[in-house]
Length: 86
Picture (cartoon, rainbow, N blue to C red):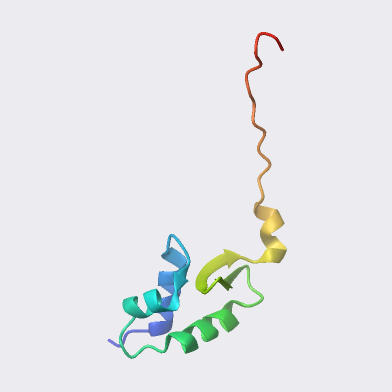
């Protein structure tokens, strides 16, 4: 069974705890993988979707599309105990 390099790259980027640089990604992919072409292909495939592949300072990560981020924002109220003086 042939390994689908695009699917592997997509899974690695999705599951990574932090953005990955191209050399780290290359170490995790088969030797013959063209990391630059893979990233360009995934970036184009995810453009206009709810999740995008984005580059942040020479590293790549999956992020919620900017135009949808307001849907995921949570307003959290922090309650604090008041001092006796208050």
